[in-house]
Amino acid sequence: MFTSSSGVFQTGSPQQQKAEHTGPRDRDQQSAFPQVNMGGAVSAGEDNDDLIDNLKEAYYIRSDLVERAFRAIDRADYYLDEYRDNAYKDLAWRHGKIHLSAPCIYSEVMEALDLHPGLSFLNLGSGTGYLSTMVGLILGPFGVNHGIELHADVIDYAYQKLDCFIKTSDSFDKFEFCEPSFVAGNCLEIPPESRQYDRVYCGAGVQKEHEDYMKTLLKVGGILVMPLEEKLTKITRTGPNSWETKKIISVSFAPLMLPKHSTNRKPKIVPLPKYEVRTLQELARICIRHTLRVTTDGGDSQSRGRGSSFSVGRGLAVAGLHKYGPRFKRRRVHRRHCNALVLATRQVVASSGIGPAPLDGNDSQGGRAEDEEEAGEREVRRQMRGSRRAGRGAGGVVEEEETVEEEDEEEEEEQQQQQQQQQQEEEEEKETGELLRPQPTVNVLRERILGLPLPEPLKMYLLYYREK
Image (cartoon, rainbow, N blue to C red; front, side, top):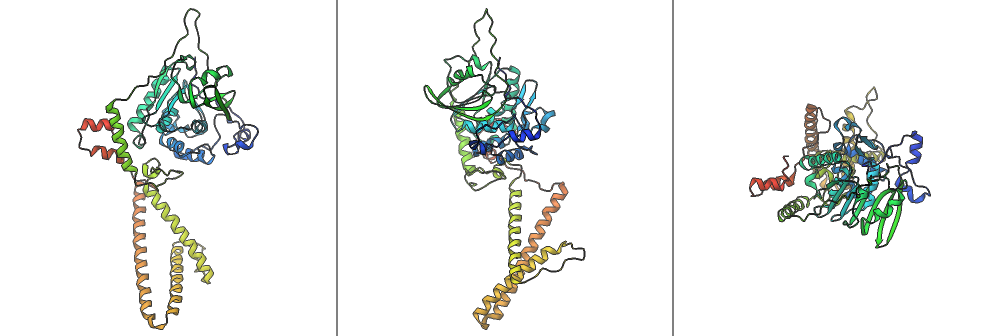
């Protein structure tokens, strides 16, 4: 039998774990491989985005495509409801036959696979389908996404989570998705004449005697990632009979379980999922959604969200993939600009010999700090204008003084309007009890499809029958 386990978690003292969890950035400089005990390599996150930020800072996530796939799928959605609180810890999780590897392991696997659209992928020990779904977001509609899992009830669980992602996830309309297909069976019982794949991942420890068997599943130029002899290993097939092997990190995975053969029966054969050619109707749906999506994404090439590094027209905040929407981003940028302006003003005031006004008796600046900063800014502007007037002669003094007064009045009016607007926003936030309330994101692709002059059943087909 083949176990769907993607690894086991080993306990140890924090000092031992810290020594063993050496970051990937330093791996090329070390003679020994860092030991990752299936979790605990990065700090726990408050939510999925926070966890991804921690993985990026630790250099486990290094590419934009992998980051975007991780942010699009909430890891907690693949947990049972009573265990969701543990979803954002960098730990492996198991409940009965259901199992998820630690986020740092999935990060290393996704990076090592070097995925891009149109590839074929085989997941040996697909489990909950979490990894297969993330891979499908990168492969696109013309890739191949297959998985083999030992337990039929785990496959049912995986299809349940997949259906939930397609029908309810806000991220689904942001991607062109390659939907995974799963079959029940043992990965060591695949017939030798089966098709080969561009990318293969095995989620259980592979014994040395099965290494060549795994290599036969790979196309020339393909990549195989698997735990081999306690090390996560990347094998690239460079020719019909040549391979390149690279050890990534030391890990501890549950081993492959051998098939049980009866003496009176022939070995069982596990057929891989069928590769089905898409119908013309499906191709039309993909083409229409792609055209509308490209039109939608065309104007936000400079948009970025927190912790994101995308430059392909799909900023996280604009795309709705981040927990904060455009409003939070604008306010945060505005505050940073104000802080920079205040700092520059203080430097100018200090160099000009203008000292700050005295504080209150209790050394509290209170509401006077802003007034002092604004007064300092106005004084600096007056001095700069005065120097310009001195060079122009006395003829235009009266006229320029009037201009200065008008500009000051306009600035004061603008500041008052900004203060009133800020007070209104703060009052609205206090009413809802939220400090930063993100605006609800608009699914532009959905709105465009609903606005097409088509019958309602066809619109729902284009929407994959998504209700929201």
